[in-house]
Image (cartoon, rainbow, N blue to C red):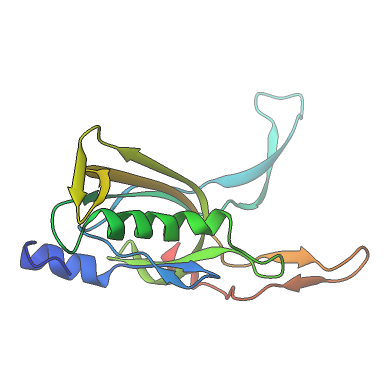
Length: 181
């Protein structure tokens, strides 16, 4: 924990859960992350009725999507080049270190926007580096690193286990209380 932060920022940072599954790696934050936007949508089937507007049949809702951002500043013995680069590799492992039989998700809880631990698919990750380089203990890393991720809620997912077989609910997914969408 970075004790140079204000008490409020330390509390927010400590309350954020961001775990990459199936590796189980916890992503630690130097500063409180920011949820920058969220979206939901409805799915509709349109049928032309030769009238002013088509008949629209509600097919359900799309999953909740949100974007989250956070920063790292390579400044001290805690948040040094090695720790920041290792943290970024833990995050990027989501895209590469998974098993075929295990559905990859990230478990997130943060403020009242995501008040209970909820599973999301990590759809994309963008990492931007400043041109300035910091060096500590012989290791170097960009001074400022900005991380942005796009996420989609993953409450129920099914997969096929061979042609013609029943769909199976894959672990570790669980039902999510709809009021938190």
